[in-house]
Length: 497
Image (cartoon, rainbow, N blue to C red; front, side, top):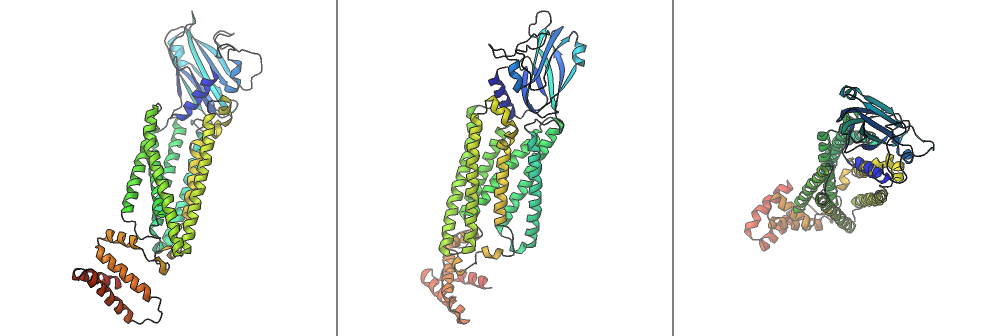
């Protein structure tokens, strides 16, 4: 078998949602996979078109492939000696145990009863090659054989097995974190901010998603067949988790609940972007499940998600910069420290992503080199799933610790210092959400301004409040007329009460 095609076959196999066992036939007479020492391949013949026939079976390590490759054709050559086996091209010692046999079938009964098992003596990449030929002239004969790989731990492919431990560990970590977060939320429930409820939602999504992923690999390990239903659930929950996480970061960056009491129309835009990201993520995840997709189809399912992620990142960092600048101007030290730390966490996570993509690019560059595949296949799970899930875990927990429920949550509410009065944009957004007219909103701002000036005088008497009301009414009559005085007075009395 050509070495380049072996590498391509292995790489393609690891990208597919393939199942154990593998079916070998005249059209696909070989397969390569990664195994751990002590694993077993069980061979079972199902059908041979012409009898009597000779079936030739070769199981070997890729490190020993050179012993079977013809120097001219770079392919494995049949017929011995002995008859029906593959030719060993040199006399150099083999590094690993191999199987090279010829089996003669004279009847259908012999075909149905035939079984063969081979135990791998070492960890590595192994190939199974089978050919069946007519006994009288050694011409190819159609056949069907099943090759089932089983390890001491179960039926998961060796390169997929680390993911079982990965998602088990993540499930436990998120469960423990969820319990701790729930206890703290319950303890300081009356002081919990709205943003902390969003963190609770993300925690819930993470607990469910990692549990579904673990269930998928556990069932795959037991049955040898991947559950498409569990895989579909995992894809949908992964898309939902990413979307909710981006949504939470965006509204935090906009200052929701801490710097601004409401986002007004911006909140609707955030929801729309989140929904678009979820649909794009679900489309990409479901599309990636197909084994054979065209380049145009790949671009079609990737482009919407790329646009959504780009929009989120740009919006988050732009909003975060504006919020930090605003807090600096207002000299709100507690909030400023929190948002500065959030900025550092996000920058650190992006720096890690850049490093990851560089490493992934280098890995992709060498993925068709058989020597590279032989060396690094055991770490492939890190590039596929491990790194991004662990990075998300560390980033999420860092943000959650930063925004954890405490008895000092009042430091981050809107009334932190006199300078925290909402500006015009905030009040207009509040008015829009509550259905209050613009004129009444202006009256509120005017009242806040009057009280803000008088609050500096510590000797002010109770008559200051009445003077504020009279000044507010005079301003209303001058600017809005009698039509706005009544609703303004009603609103003011409700506020005072």
